[in-house]
Length: 415
Image (cartoon, rainbow, N blue to C red; front, side, top):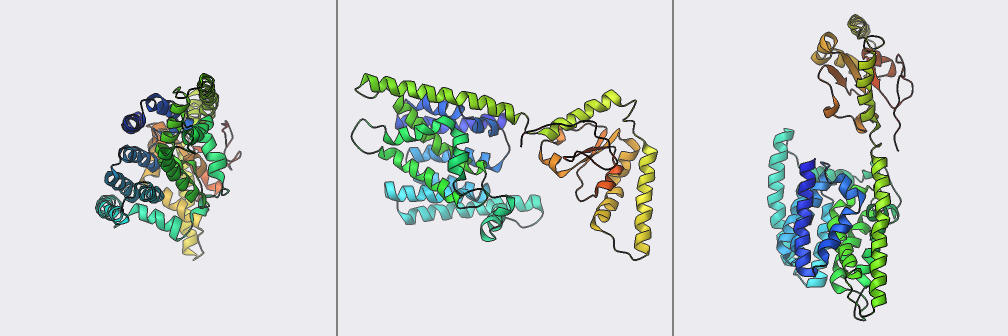
């Protein structure tokens, strides 16, 4: 994760170098301050999410966009769309429109570039992913088909239409959002706005507005647009602190306001960092389980292997009896019997120090292989009835009471 974070920063530096060369030396420190004084970028830069890999590639795409290397820009964004995140197609459309409107790039040229990069990318991703999935597949197309064609993204939850503008963006960039306005309207001349920044604002707003039409919304869907936001806000900050204007009072006022805005970001970053440390209660619960076991293993937590063997035998005999009578077996019983017959479970009864069941909520909120102990067995079997959990010695559950278990510890977390 540290290596990934370093790569993310490297991609950002590559884009920043081009921005400094084309938009002025003031972009150097300004872009760094805007990026580093936001919580989400720092928190997620080391996370192995497709959105993060897409963001890394988009950093490089806009490195080429800034220097007007249109073909390379389209190649990279098309490849990202096909291989990593299909929703980046919205960014590709926004960039293509910006090229056509602001730079009069030919529609035919852009189309040919998309086809060239798309065909190569499809061949590579289908060959690579099909090998690992043992079937012919194009993962990102399946995502597109589920979310767009079948329109089932709402099954993952919905948010209001303006959620990105009223909640997500304010949390992401905090007070730095003001620099977006500075980038467009701080001018030494009487022109209404900065034409150079207008195209970046168009790309940014087009992307966010398009995603606002989808019922399912997540902040991570905005990560591919972070490079554009950093260019805009970095440019606004560099203008506000660059002492470009004839009035000393205006220069000083803008400088002081900019510094205050950056300082305003600091406290929320510390607060969100503190809160995020409690975002994985199940991980803490599993660690606490290990420590509690060490403290009480000679008393309450001694593993009764003979009891587990008897329970297993009882379930198997009951299952056989039901089958012989021709009675219908419920799904949870099928799942339980399949688990009891596995070599893993039988070996755990004979050798493990503990058998831990991890429910769905715990598996989604911090439990990972990195926390497991060598002599313990962990099961994430879904679909078991509460009474069937007695085949385990420990249970991690979001429920305060689990049949057959004593609640010995709880961990709080932020929702």
